[in-house]
Length: 280
Image (cartoon, rainbow, N blue to C red; front, top):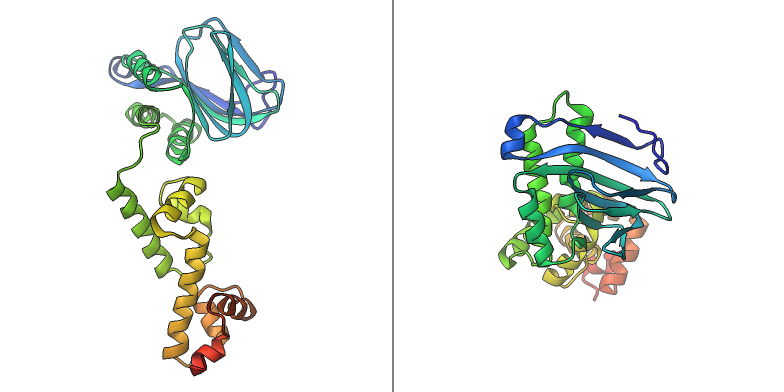
């Protein structure tokens, strides 16, 4: 549903939902949800709106005013707001936001628990899961005749859990497992482009957080590891096959024979031909 509201651009949409009795008694449920692209005139100022608000800043920046304090929120920030109380938020420079007004029998308890743990506006170093959960909720209203209230509840719980556990690191074993899977995927797909965004998406992490964890666990950035893996694979082909440099560059994912030779010499200090002949 398109909506005309000051500061909201025409590419934005919003969807409203009337919860079933089962959802009101059992689940977190949506009152309305949407994605807004806004210019610098967008502002919301209310005394009360019977719900809680989850708002994720996809890009741009804005602010929230609570209890006389103005708190800036930028890209990657997730905000939980008690809209039963007077509140104000908006942007002076423009932003792209995913949001959902929700409620439920446990909503107040979750809000209180999160408020006691830390600030209700947080910058997520790993925002991918929270963003995807809000996207999935919105997708159901955009593309399905009737959204599953049970699945909507699951996605809202997922976002609230991100807030509840904010600041705690993933367990070491889980982190190692994720990195091992990423390394295996890289090794098995050296002939593919393997951009950082794809590797991070497979690990369900943001590119920034994936790079940080990868470097911490391996000692290399994802790009450094990929280049070294390609050079090591090329060494194997040079010593065990008669493949041409052009064929090896293709098999190892280099963009061209020239790029392969340049990178190989930069990493090893010698040319592929010298390495093949053993003239070290």
